[in-house]
Length: 118
Image 1 (cartoon, rainbow, N blue to C red):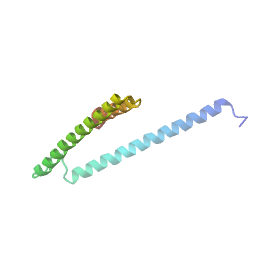
Image 2 (image 1 turned 135 degrees about the vertical axis):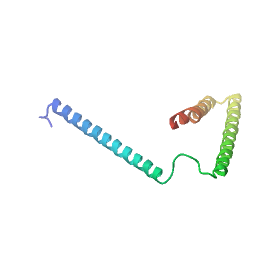
Image 3 (image 1 turned 180 degrees about the horizontal axis):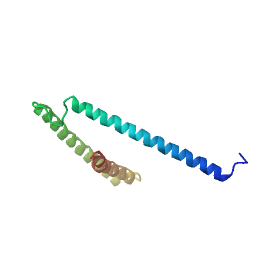
Protein backbone atom coordinates (compact mmCIF):
# COMPACT_ATOMS: atom_id res chain seq x y z
CA UNK A 1 0.00 0.00 0.00
CA UNK A 2 2.98 2.29 -0.33
CA UNK A 3 1.89 3.54 -3.74
CA UNK A 4 -1.57 4.64 -2.55
CA UNK A 5 -1.83 8.35 -1.87
CA UNK A 6 -3.46 9.67 1.34
CA UNK A 7 -6.20 11.18 -0.79
CA UNK A 8 -7.20 7.72 -1.99
CA UNK A 9 -7.34 6.38 1.57
CA UNK A 10 -9.45 9.32 2.63
CA UNK A 11 -11.83 8.75 -0.27
CA UNK A 12 -12.14 5.08 0.68
CA UNK A 13 -13.03 5.97 4.27
CA UNK A 14 -15.58 8.51 3.08
CA UNK A 15 -17.18 5.94 0.81
CA UNK A 16 -17.25 3.42 3.63
CA UNK A 17 -18.82 5.97 6.00
CA UNK A 18 -21.41 6.84 3.36
CA UNK A 19 -22.25 3.17 2.84
CA UNK A 20 -22.65 2.62 6.58
CA UNK A 21 -24.87 5.71 6.84
CA UNK A 22 -27.01 4.55 3.94
CA UNK A 23 -27.34 1.08 5.48
CA UNK A 24 -28.41 2.65 8.80
CA UNK A 25 -30.99 4.80 7.01
CA UNK A 26 -32.43 1.82 5.12
CA UNK A 27 -32.56 -0.22 8.34
CA UNK A 28 -34.35 2.62 10.16
CA UNK A 29 -36.94 3.01 7.42
CA UNK A 30 -37.52 -0.76 7.29
CA UNK A 31 -37.97 -1.07 11.06
CA UNK A 32 -40.35 1.91 11.10
CA UNK A 33 -42.40 0.31 8.34
CA UNK A 34 -42.58 -2.96 10.28
CA UNK A 35 -43.66 -1.12 13.46
CA UNK A 36 -46.38 0.84 11.66
CA UNK A 37 -47.61 -2.34 10.01
CA UNK A 38 -47.90 -4.04 13.40
CA UNK A 39 -49.86 -1.07 14.77
CA UNK A 40 -52.31 -1.28 11.88
CA UNK A 41 -52.68 -5.02 12.54
CA UNK A 42 -53.56 -4.33 16.19
CA UNK A 43 -56.12 -1.74 15.17
CA UNK A 44 -57.63 -4.17 12.65
CA UNK A 45 -57.90 -6.74 15.46
CA UNK A 46 -60.09 -4.33 17.45
CA UNK A 47 -57.58 -2.65 19.75
CA UNK A 48 -58.61 1.00 19.74
CA UNK A 49 -57.07 2.37 22.95
CA UNK A 50 -60.24 2.11 25.00
CA UNK A 51 -60.51 -0.27 27.96
CA UNK A 52 -62.98 -3.14 27.58
CA UNK A 53 -66.33 -2.92 29.34
CA UNK A 54 -65.39 -5.09 32.37
CA UNK A 55 -61.81 -3.91 32.91
CA UNK A 56 -62.38 -2.47 36.40
CA UNK A 57 -60.99 -5.57 38.15
CA UNK A 58 -57.73 -5.44 36.22
CA UNK A 59 -57.45 -1.68 36.73
CA UNK A 60 -57.90 -2.18 40.49
CA UNK A 61 -55.23 -4.89 40.49
CA UNK A 62 -52.74 -2.68 38.62
CA UNK A 63 -53.45 0.26 40.96
CA UNK A 64 -52.89 -1.96 44.02
CA UNK A 65 -49.63 -3.33 42.63
CA UNK A 66 -48.46 0.20 41.81
CA UNK A 67 -49.17 1.39 45.36
CA UNK A 68 -47.34 -1.64 46.80
CA UNK A 69 -44.39 -0.96 44.52
CA UNK A 70 -44.18 2.65 45.68
CA UNK A 71 -44.28 1.54 49.32
CA UNK A 72 -41.57 -1.05 48.71
CA UNK A 73 -39.28 1.47 46.96
CA UNK A 74 -39.74 4.06 49.72
CA UNK A 75 -39.04 1.47 52.43
CA UNK A 76 -35.93 0.22 50.63
CA UNK A 77 -34.66 3.77 50.11
CA UNK A 78 -35.17 4.51 53.81
CA UNK A 79 -33.25 1.38 54.78
CA UNK A 80 -30.36 2.27 52.47
CA UNK A 81 -30.23 5.79 53.92
CA UNK A 82 -30.08 4.36 57.47
CA UNK A 83 -27.23 2.02 56.47
CA UNK A 84 -25.29 4.83 54.75
CA UNK A 85 -25.80 7.10 57.79
CA UNK A 86 -24.41 4.29 59.97
CA UNK A 87 -21.41 4.00 57.68
CA UNK A 88 -20.80 7.75 57.99
CA UNK A 89 -21.04 7.58 61.78
CA UNK A 90 -18.62 4.64 61.88
CA UNK A 91 -16.11 6.65 59.86
CA UNK A 92 -16.14 4.54 56.71
CA UNK A 93 -14.09 5.97 53.86
CA UNK A 94 -16.40 4.34 51.30
CA UNK A 95 -19.60 5.88 52.70
CA UNK A 96 -19.57 8.87 50.28
CA UNK A 97 -19.19 6.45 47.36
CA UNK A 98 -22.24 4.51 48.49
CA UNK A 99 -24.18 7.72 49.07
CA UNK A 100 -23.48 9.07 45.58
CA UNK A 101 -24.26 5.69 43.99
CA UNK A 102 -27.57 5.62 45.84
CA UNK A 103 -28.43 9.21 44.83
CA UNK A 104 -27.49 8.47 41.22
CA UNK A 105 -29.66 5.35 41.21
CA UNK A 106 -32.63 7.21 42.65
CA UNK A 107 -32.25 10.01 40.08
CA UNK A 108 -32.09 7.38 37.35
CA UNK A 109 -35.22 5.63 38.61
CA UNK A 110 -37.27 8.72 39.43
CA UNK A 111 -36.22 11.18 36.70
CA UNK A 112 -34.38 9.67 33.74
CA UNK A 113 -36.40 6.52 33.14
CA UNK A 114 -39.84 8.19 33.32
CA UNK A 115 -38.59 10.98 31.04
CA UNK A 116 -37.30 8.41 28.54
CA UNK A 117 -40.57 6.48 28.58
CA UNK A 118 -42.72 9.54 27.74
